[in-house]
Amino acid sequence: ERGRLIQALPKDGDMAAIFADEEKVKAEIQSHTKDVSIAAVNSPKQTVISGKREAIWEIADRLKKQGIKSKLLNVSHAFHSPLMEPMLEKFERVAAAIRYQPPQCEFISNLTGQPVAAHTIDARYWCRHARQSVQFAKSIAYLGTRGHRLFVELGPQPVLAGMAAKISSSVTLI
Image (cartoon, rainbow, N blue to C red; front, side, top):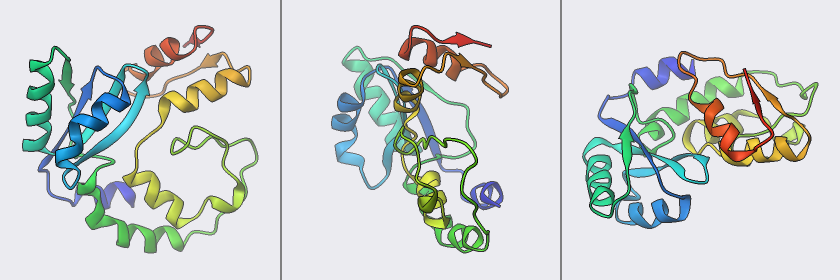
């Protein structure tokens, strides 16, 4: 249902991987906070921004002039951005109809990079998950401190596995 609601949104957004740290990117998007947000912190030197197309392009161009590289991502929508907000109320109603059970194993939240307490996984959690930044780097770092070394990436392109290896030098990729 989350996917259906997102796909029904206008396709007027973009996402870009910025090859800079989160603090630098936060400073650069300050003038566009109504339209753009940090969508993901994938590694110490890669932060993804998401939001209105024109603002994303303007920010990427401004960073290019500073010598900071970026790459537009091939996406259908500006995920984890203000452009997701119109679907959140409907999504929360759908998510509230689900009966949640405590996780049977440690559940690491990409919202915090830390384990989630069972009572915090509810409809509001999943709305935050759709809108807020993905803390991939923190999640991988946490797992590394817990002794996890083997990571499997499932998806059409192996993008995140390479970033995991940069975060934790003892990661084995499959």
